Image 1 (tube, chains in turn brown, cyan):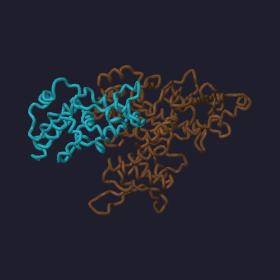
Image 2 (cartoon, chains in turn cyan, purple; image 1 turned 90 degrees about the horizontal axis):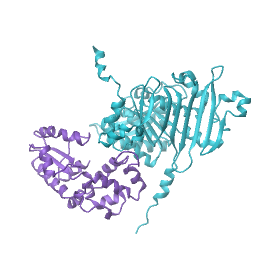
Image 3 (tube, chains in turn brown, green; image 1 turned 180 degrees about the horizontal axis):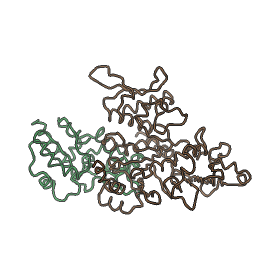
Length: 394
Length: 183
């Protein structure tokens, strides 16, 4: 009898993969107070302008603090200052707080909390920074050093290699956060983004593709080709190349009636094709948390219906956490999405409230009665008077 | 995917694939498909599920006046029964002992639940994680259950072997053969 493959070893290394297990926000943008338990897959659902992007921005903020050439002041400055970031409903407490727990299935979770505001000169200032692991406190600020020299409060310890040794994995984890929101028009205008920062809208997507090592890039594009065969059957041979001016391009060969198909570049790809390539690339790029904005945009509904399962199956080999905002009933119709993977964003006069689906009794009751998730959730997040929109034309 | 392979096995060429919106929607559309079948052949595959009574009565209720080129076939009690009918392939795919798979799949009351429970006993942690719903998730299937069943249907399922164990599948294949013969 053939020896059995040792599966247990593999699953152990899989289980030791970190993810955000909790997030708490206070006075962050349009949220007065949020406290959530996160899963490996997370779907953020809510009407337009409810704040789903603002929620994801809290994670990008943490990533900016630890990014190369970044830092706390950079992260705040990029968002135009504390006043811009702070919730409008912040009355008694002028400070903003972000707290996250990072853990895996095996060991004790790390907890990082940052409270910040402004100093007397309206410059961003760290008001409190604490790191703990289990019941061990690794950092508590402000400490004596901070009292003696308040200038130190212009930086987090998190961003300083000399100061974060005790909790380096937290900094490394924040640095591994990836955000993808490919806007096809901007991918095509690849020369529009001059800043060294990562373009949030994908203008530097092609540069990021080119920056990957040739071996990795080819392997990924090969895999993406195979997946595209399903969604865009005419497209073969996906490549990334630089033109004569050094500008990066994606090109693909479409099967026509001609025996040698014709090459097209991203300027001729449809929005859907570009977004799908971007999505598939993002799923392969990195092992840290992946933030996605409405992955369903421009994609055929039949493709969208498969996205939740695609994410799960990718997580088998690469257990990275995914947080995705969505408004798609096709995506949410997946029967495998658990109610604790859904987070409902509900705007109110006192800021947006966020609730995990699992805590909303009505959702459980209606699911038990055989209704599908979109049947239950989308009416809860629908703009109240959506039916009146056509009257705009009158 | 299962329906395409079934059709191909009797020599039918699958064309436009409709549905994908759940069983209720499919049931509601049967009269429309029946009308469309006046001009071209139509195959509808639906799970019997928890409908009481016998399959014949169910079909007569849903489709009282079938067009000549219409075939409404019913998986008893759901497609999972037909998958379990090919016990060897399924046992290998799910990484479970073959004797765990029920011998007469047509008689299983809740085939989907049975399939999930089979996956629960898998030696593969990947199968368990993907096909079995998490405790407290509120769902009846795991996060990649559908994808796994599609994969099984597409690459591993042996329809001829399954028809040996499932009389309802055998009947469906015979009914579809008659469609292949007149188109």
